[in-house]
Length: 104
Image 1: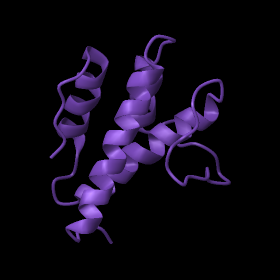
Image 2: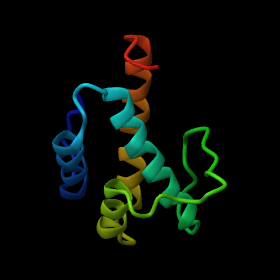
Image 3: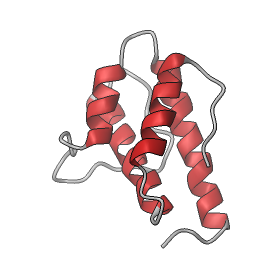
Image 4: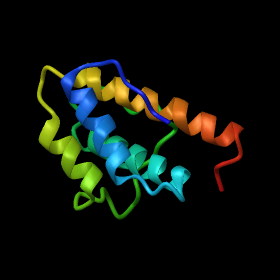
């Protein structure tokens, strides 16, 4: 489970993640958020690069996904660090899911 002691923006991300995750597919939910966040960071290249080994699909970003839309709505110049932090939280969670064999 993802927990947070951070900022308001981070709390929104965590709460949205918890609200919309598929509890039967934790791996899929984690990757959906990770891909959306990395797509958004790639599309908005003035910010930091995605920490994951990520290459955008040849079809481009899924800009219609709930996750992508939320990142777009919450972004402002003052919260790049929070986006990066959420990305790192997702990466740690993904690694934990792999270690506990919840991946596929």
